[in-house]
Picture (cartoon, rainbow, N blue to C red):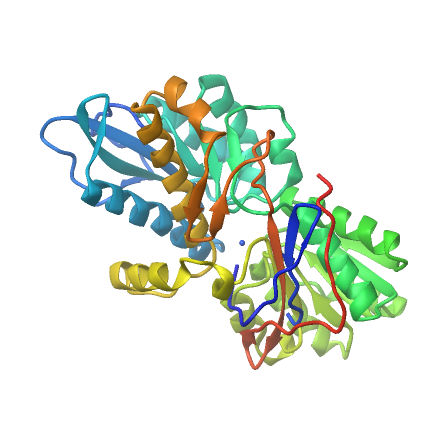
Length: 408
């Protein structure tokens, strides 16, 4: 998620960290739609093949601002493909987005996955969250349906041994390492507390961060947990305050991080605050207000300024949707482009034919060059660090190099 300023990229062992401190298909389909489903405005051609691409995100609830943003990225890519005109196996193809609301819930996500299959979707962009994507990925794998994620950061996503799962964004192991090294080596924070929301994303990220802190010579003085629906953190923070941490790391999303920081300051805690891509949003700054000033966060991707195609994409996005990019639209746009490019190279919208082409991808996307490791991870994943200054996430070049290894 980016609301960022200038960054300075650095690469170590095939892992590029733009170290900025200071702080995330195709099938002949019928036109019937299930509950919770939204087809894009694209009108299928009177003749030819209708290629249906699934887009799975939380479209309602506290994470809807992220979900709608990600969904918009897919729709923009599909609109461009239709304007270009694509022929597959000698037949004109019209791409159609089938949008589903998974509510960032694992159980709902599996229901969404099944609805996609029932409606002739043979490739999926999503799901937005790791907790939703991982259980859904098994259903897609069993059906042979390609899945390209633009925001899933849990390492487990590509550690399942499936040949249909890909991501075009760095993972939480890389984020945790970068954040921990920056906290201990640059900020000189030795006594650190951690709170996580017990989700696949939040807890996994907190675990990776904790290990990296200790490896860098820091100490975890206290660890607590909450939920991704909580609003009252006073009891947890009172307990943490007694441990006198210099830094509090939160593994979770902006909807909880904002109130948490406000309550920290209400208790008189001067502890510095740090999160990852779940916190690096304009919504966090809005929810926390002045209490968030000076907070640190990361994004599992390059800053907007370093995305080679961001300026043009941003103009197109604003023109179509009349709003600012929240977080992952550039990534889901590129994810949809990966799928369409694979179909074009295979000359087919049959998953059995175009799935093998995805692993061969060599594409220059909005977010940068896209190619995949053998497990489906993007090559040379980038992590960027930011600080909230004057209500805006900005990048500041650190005094010394801060980079994370590419350990997978």
